[in-house]
Image (cartoon, rainbow, N blue to C red):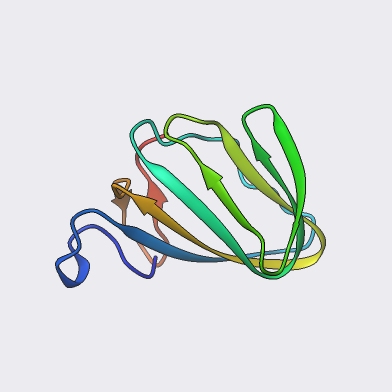
Length: 103
């Protein structure tokens, strides 16, 4: 989590940086009231948004409307992406990792 609700006074935005291991896939999930974008920073993968599935690579941006199921899979090697969500989803900042509370 680079920027979460309340960080630096942020009320309407969350920003994350995620590194994915080769072959890993994020659980299919949705944010009921939030828009989200993913920007692929490194690697290639497959992005699932609703019923659509597309290949993504460095420089690709994907928009996810509120309430839309989505997930990303690292297909060839490691994958890194930045995501921005507005309004921010609530998270549990337990231990050294964070977990979204809304799915």
